[in-house]
Image 1 (tube, one colour):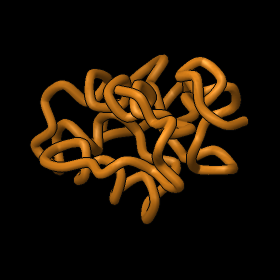
Image 2 (cartoon, one colour):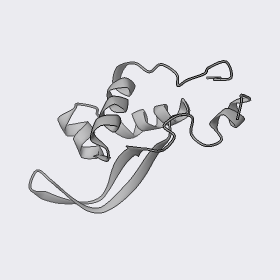
Image 3 (cartoon, helix red, strand yellow):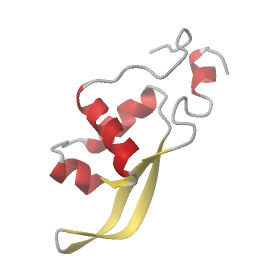
Length: 98
C-alpha cells in the first residue's frame, strides 16, 4: 500500500484496529493478553499488518512472564514507538516524503 499521498496514518479496521487501540492504551501488551483476553488468535500477524502500514510497533521479548498462575518464557510484549507513524524509513521505502 502506497502512502505517498497521505498526511497521516492509514485507516485500520477489524482486529488491526483493536490491536492498535490496545497498544495505545495498555502498552506494553504481552502477546498472551491479545490472544487470551481479547480473542485475537494471530496477534503476531496483526502486528505484522500494522508494521506493513507503517506503524512503529516495537517488540520486546520478556525472559519470563507470569500469566494465569504459570510462568511463561520468552513472551513477546508489544508497544508503540515514537513517532507512532510513520516508522523510520517507511515513507522513503514507499516513494513518499521523508
